[in-house]
Length: 306
Length: 240
Ligand SMILES: Nc1ncnc2c1ncn2[C@@H]1O[C@H](COP(=O)(O)OP(=O)(O)OP(=O)(O)O)[C@@H](O)[C@H]1O
Ligand SMILES: [Mg+2]
Image 1 (cartoon, rainbow over the protein chains, first blue to last red):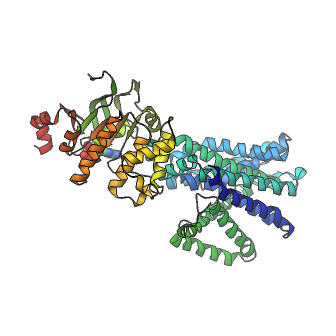
Image 2 (cartoon, rainbow over the protein chains, first blue to last red; image 1 turned 90 degrees about the horizontal axis):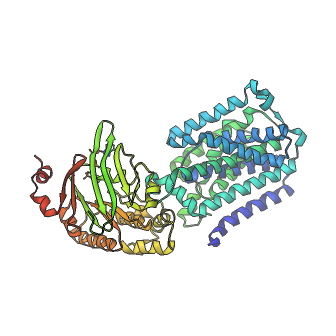
Image 3 (cartoon, rainbow over the protein chains, first blue to last red; image 1 turned 180 degrees about the horizontal axis):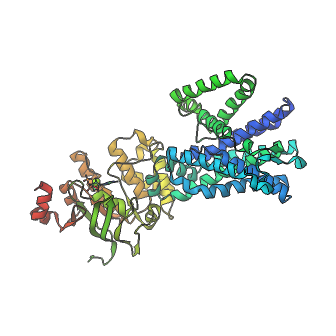
């Protein structure tokens, strides 16, 4: 029974080893932090997009809600940053609950409505009349609790949690029921699956991961603005990483984020014009020749993808 | 009245509208425990719509549906399935990315609370003779195999009532005989059925209790022989 989890467990352990080991050889901690952040976000998006087929263009809304939820709890309620991370996750889940009716929409309608919702949330948070709570457009300052190493390991913790969730979905009947909903809602419900409940659970799990990631990001960054944590770049990057790697497995989104984010960091930041060209070409090629991501190459070679 | 005294399904005055069009216009049908009712009628008379409404795939716009003593009117499909109703599709809808086994597994796990799941899956595949290809991806199955997979999936939820929509359409005479025999074996396990079929000879081998629909309403109920002598039935089948 538990044996089927071994390959996924192997992947998770490898990632943990990498991010514990690498700082000893490579001193750009902030790059490693951001890499972990995108790995976690990619797995979080995988939960909702990979398993149920809903593509949330406003995924960043959960990230921002988590960053602000965590930061406000830390500054106003004076709780510990670690607890703040949890609060960030919960705030994102509550945001997700409010948005559950969006799941009645399908395809592009859902994607656009979700995008609009995330921007609405951005405008609310950045509104100067909420300055007493959110600091409005002036940003949040968490430098009193700043602790880079603690933040780094908190991010690793969130990443492990996200990977474990996906490993569960990859190997469990619940994950199978989500894949069934993605393929044919009617057939799934006639198999006895409570479609509305199952997809809402997936939605909230996905929000939880993004919310905790946002809260850790806020803590690690110490100073941030609404425009940072509600930036659509976060959604776009995450979606591209997941599409590039491949959905509904633990390894796919990891591979996508590892390759593309590293590339972005080494080519993109120094010579953005080449990078954009390269990135654009890559996406075109991908959509044309590898719509199911890089891991589909492995699957074609009959390699099991954890 | 039912010979064993127990009515399993009681549908009365059912209405289903698509826009202004009444696909079901007050149809009634009832099924006794463990019995088979044949359902016939010309194209577009509302047979599939009736099955869709009973199984919760479409929401009704009037009438009543009682199953096993409780109302299933407007319940969502998964609840209706849990109470003991399932169906097959005229055009099969397997989860094509999943294997045959996974399709049935899902139904066994989520469709019924009781029993050994592995055994349920094996039994369901055995009845429809798909055990040999249990690991095949269902997208690669033939049309007939996909219909059988739909039947196995429905059986895995342990229904008391099975709604079978034109399972024999497009099959050879040999296959038809085999399917009829299979449905009889399923009935012998205590499962009641509504069997929709154009092929009246096929219905005749299964039951002498036939309902004929026309334009979303009841036209006739009785045996096939009586139906063949009924002027109205002959008229709608041959066209006026
Ligand atoms: N989803 C739908 N939207 C609009 N009209 C529909 C829909 N489903 C069925 N109809 C219409 O309802 C009527 C009944 O269709 P239904 O499929 O129930 O007939 P049927 O008796 O099963 O026919 P057949 O023997 O051809 O399978 C038809 O006129 C059909 O066009
Ligand atoms: Mg039909």
